[in-house]
Image 1 (cartoon, rainbow, N blue to C red):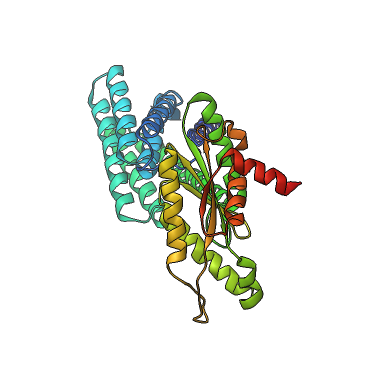
Image 2 (cartoon, rainbow, N blue to C red):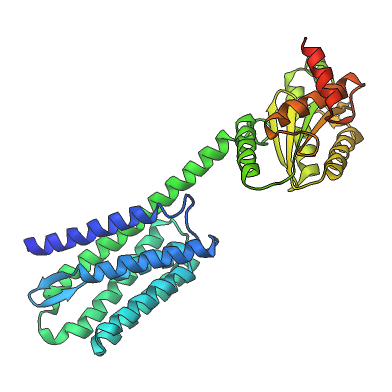
Length: 373
């Protein structure tokens, strides 16, 4: 009995270690929607784990060896979808027939196919993280395991002794595997949510200044490797302080939310929109010529000025915004200066009467320097 316990513990240790390493394959939970290359790698990794389990056998009675090769198949089918499941199933079957071809081999391969297909169907019908689903899958696989063992080992006369050891080990290992993978996935989901929250402006839902800074740093690094056009549009709501002073900060917050939505809807997927603080916003644009960037900024200016911002009290406020545009490498010679150059152009827009778009030039840089003095 002591040796059996050791065998089971060795299998569990291998499973836990393998699942921990599997969790390192991707920062995101692997699903049917993950990249194909990631799903293929996941299937191959689970295949290796299954092959190792086939070597790390359990001996319930002297001379009889069984293993838990089906557990990685359950994990693949439960969490990752058909592609990884097919990979691990095929590799197990090919390896099993390479050892020998007999009735036991056919029974073992049929068992793996039924585990894979049945788990895929169960997960399609039942909620993924439900305890009921865990139980149904685990019981299904354990019953199949018992039937296969009964068919293959019935003539030994020790089938009850074998099942009394293997079925509890199979059930507990399958259940524990699903729970661990679920917890890893939920932890990753929670981390993603926290990271996204930390990089979002709580009021408008746009990227915040931290996210903007990180994204700009990424772009700076990319320009070292690849020559590409990068433009920064800085935006400032004209006379926003008057809104807060006249209608209160709640009205100001409502204006900021509506302003952010107009900005985001106007940019869509063509730029990276963020609120950098107060009434200051920015849009980072890649791979667009200066002419198109200016056209985008002008469209945004018109979108903001076109209709009043309606407060919860029913009051409509007509507001405008000033824009500054800096473009690398056409107007800004060094990517490190793109923020200061865009700010200089924005300052020039305000100096020239607001509600306008200004493209950075050396004149704006001089004007900004004089203003700082």
